[in-house]
Length: 403
Image 1 (cartoon, rainbow, N blue to C red):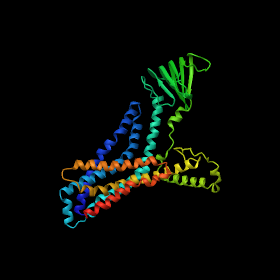
Image 2: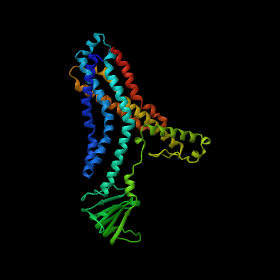
Image 3: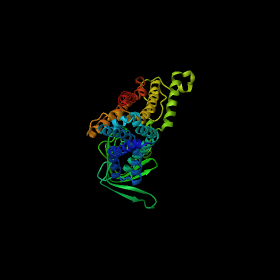
Image 4: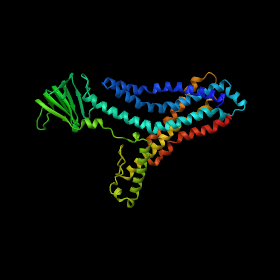
């Protein structure tokens, strides 16, 4: 690599690195707020560290392409206004040669983006959702805060003035004592208030069990009764609370590339079988003609042709969606360099705004196309490629102007 190429590459990498650090901090603010909530709930340091580590790939998926775009505009805008680009071309260096170093960097970043989109980000999302679910039940069971309602548990809101961790007489098991206990039960479409001077809370298997003392229940438990039930001791059980709160099933967003590709292939086979029942009668008999059925998020549906089409469309869209995100680094550098060469002197701030605008517009178009992910007639797996086509087309127009 010649001196000129090293100079261009060094300037480009420094600008991209500094921009990336700033953008990473800005885009991490939302995750930091979530972490602060976990800390306030009493989450352990190890869980908080796992959550932050799982969030980093998603942040990098945004910041790397944007940093490359801003670096392209700033570095080549400065070189253009200082007549460095003109001097290079006067010495016989072609514009494509000037672009070579940043283009190679963008290709490497696109490869990294493919890994982030198809492996690191799905795994990170799955870890974050699992941790969030686990912390929700921990907040409700182990880390209940006196003085505020805990409503993370389905159909139950719980309040207490004071709590204390207690041991049973044998010393082998324990429970949480809640004082001045109030529960709002919304199960079965009803609304019931339960007051108790004291409650002993335990997790038994997948159930959450409250043993209440000096209890008032309004309306009464028995339908024939009226007013308020007054009971000295009452056991109140919420079934399958712990397992339901801790369990998080994978959704398409959590699939790595191999899982997503296999699911899309399976969905294609399912769709073909539904359209041709004679080829797979066992699948055809498991389906229904209900055209209003919608696919589940975590498993391919086998209930209707329309639902199967939506499921296959969504998986096919996600495969293309992730590839487009990965290619954004290459597209931004390809467009950013010739655009930067058209910048005016002392307008680096304008270049920063222009880069962010182009990058956000690119991402916004991709995100908007996601609204069509379950509409096969709209061909969303093709629409999502529109910003890539626009960027390449713009580059084909702009680059020859500087040759």
